[in-house]
Image (cartoon, rainbow, N blue to C red; front, side, top):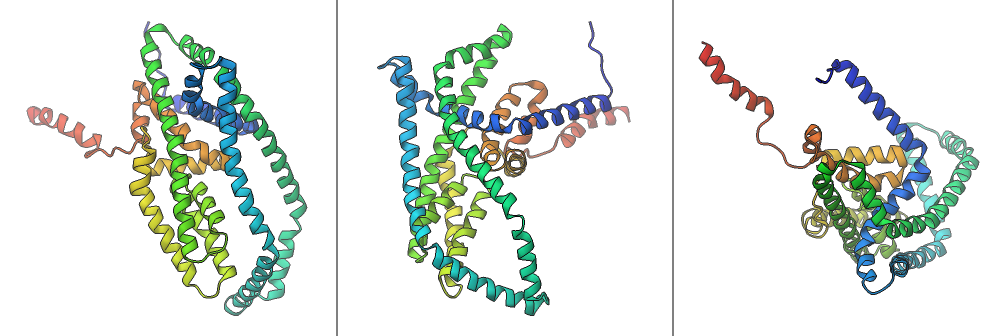
Length: 365
């Protein structure tokens, strides 16, 4: 029985409605899906260690040991950053005083060049501060949410590692047996892509953080190690994080130092580090098997931020990489897989089709 062809406008409407519905569900269930998504990434990353431990220990004990190792590593990093933040907090009053002096200078500059009186500027600042109770409430809610996420993610990881055979069998049984080879390829490449991407990203973060810290220490910037590691963490966001990471040390240097030579040195040093990262570190260390082009990367990072905030920005690239693996295996979706990739064709399809049709036209003449 021949399948019925629906008009394009009807297909487009149904597709658009489906996308809107999926986006609404993802946004509404963000508090549940964000920690669950992070747990999937970490579970896939820790799976080789857990599998190796199962050869020596029972399944439950292997999962527990794997989880404890991961918690100890992350806890050690957080403890190190906490010590750096504590040192930063000790000098916070001094920084606040210098920052207020800088704001006064900026206020006079705005009054002189833009004609906006200082009193008017103060009124605008006061008006912005009137919303601080709501801001404090949002911040408190974020802290509580973060604590709950920290608690629930290890639980998710434990259960995923424990039930991984059940989950994989479910994926196979959802599809018909004739698609088992294709499903196996998708699962294998997805696992490999996530593992190489996340592990490589962590190594890249450590290298870039070290380079940032050394550069800031040479320039004499205070809190060089803390700012360097913050820059390394932000660098995990492709194309956008590196630009944002420059702002923090520039602000600190502006507050703590006179003149602008240090700020210029920071910008130059970070640009050199970004060049080294983009051309040497990232291609050799991360070496993700599914390459996403720069245009799609920037768009999905911004969409991830609009959907799930900072968490969405970190999750967007692995999510799109998995989608590309799936698209490349389905004939109807292969054009989308090519669009996500970084392989640029030499000629467009219009030229190819035109050359195919040309002999027919000449034959008719």
